[in-house]
Image 1 (cartoon, one colour):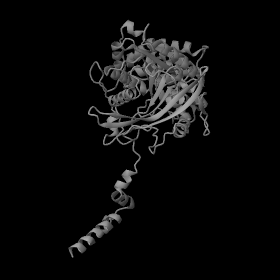
Image 2 (cartoon, rainbow, N blue to C red; image 1 turned 90 degrees about the vertical axis):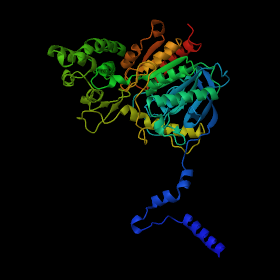
Image 3 (spheres, rainbow, N blue to C red; image 1 turned 90 degrees about the horizontal axis):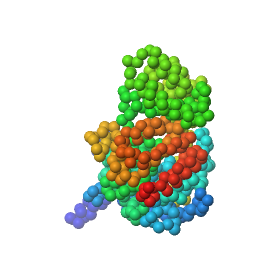
Length: 526
C-alpha cells in the first residue's frame, strides 16, 4: 500500500511539473506569458544569449594593397574577460585585432582604439578610419541604402602599427558577466578601469609587453584616454603615444552660467559660415577665417561675455556686428541671443533662408525639418546619413568575413539599457573629486611621469560636438613644463567629428599619423 501511494504521489508530482501552472482561483488566473516565465524559467534561462566567460577567438587571414605594398595580416575577433582584484570575472569585452604578418611581435607597435558616447561601440573607428577595410564614404551626403560601398582601405594604419578595436561594456558584443550589473561599468572611472584591464589583458595574452604601445580615442573616448593613460602608467605600462581624435576632455566648460563653451564653439561657427558661403569678404582658405575668429574669441568676445549685463549698449552692438561678420548670423539674432549663440540655434538659423538645417557632428551636412520656422533642428543629419551603412556592413562583415558567430546581439549603443545612468564623477590624480570630469589633468600627470609620452590631437574644422578651439583650450590648461609642453601637437582637417569619412582628410590623417609613429616608436628619443 505504501509503495502504491508513493508511486501515485510521484506520478502526480511528475504531472504537476509537466503541466501548466494552474491558478488557485479564477481571480488569480495567470496569463500565458506569466505561466511561461514561471514554469519554464530554467529552460528560458538556458536559451539566453550570454557573453562567454571563457575567452573566445576566431582567426582569419586577409591582405590589402596600401601605401605601395601588399599588407598581409591576421584578423582576430574575440573576447577579453576582465576580472576584479579578487580574480572574479566581471565582464567580457569584444575586440577585433589586425596584426601584420611576418613581424617580430615584441617590437611591432600595437595601438588600442575605441569610440566614445559614452555608450558607443567602436564601430566608427573600426569601419571608417584605420582598419584594412572601410565604408567608402567621401562627400558629406546621405549614404544610399544597400548595397553599400565597402572595400579595402588603402589608407589603413596597418603599415605603421597593429590595431586592436575594443567595444565598451554594454555596447557591441561586450557584456557584464554573472551577477555584475552593467551599471558597475557605466561611469567615468568605472569605464576607464574596464578599458585599462582589457588593454592589460590583451597585452599579456598576446605577448605585447615589449611592443611600443599607443591608444587612440575618439570623442568621449578622448576623455577616457586621459584616465586610461594615467591608469596604465600607474600600473607599469609606459605608453609611447596618445592620439585624441575629436577631443572633449573637460566637461566642466559646459556648465550653465559659464562662457567657455560659447568661446570654444565660436571658431567652429566661423569655419561653418565660411564653408556655406555665409561670410562677407570671404577669404580663400578656411584657416585664415578661423584664425580671425580665434583672435576675436579670446579677445573682444571673451571680454564682452565676462561683463554680462554690465556691458554698454555701444559695446554690445559692436560685438554683435563683429560676430555677424565672422559667423554669418544677423546682428539682430545675435543681440536677441544676448551674444550667446547656442549650438542648436546656430544649426537652425544659419541656412534658414534655404529651409535647411546643418549637422552637429559635421556641420557640412544639410538637413530638412518638418517645421522650417522652428527654433532648433529635429535631428543631426550628419549622424543619420551614415549610421545605416556602418551597422549593416559591420554585421555582415563580422559574421561572414571574420567568421565570428554568436547569438549575442550587436548593440548600437548601451544607452537606454536598464541602469544606464552615467556616473560623471571623477577622482583625478591631483586635486579633489570632480562632479564634472576633466581628464586632461590625468593625462598631464601621466606626461609628467613619462616625459617621453607624446600626444597628438586630431581636429575637424566642422565638428561642433567637440570643437577644436575647446581642445586647444583644454590642452593649454594642462600646465606642463616647457620641456614637456612640446610633446602636445595639433592637426586640422576639412571634415567633421569623424573627419575620416572624407577621402582627402583620411589621406592627410595617415600622413600625419605616420609621422607621429616614426617620431615616437623608439620611445620618443629626440
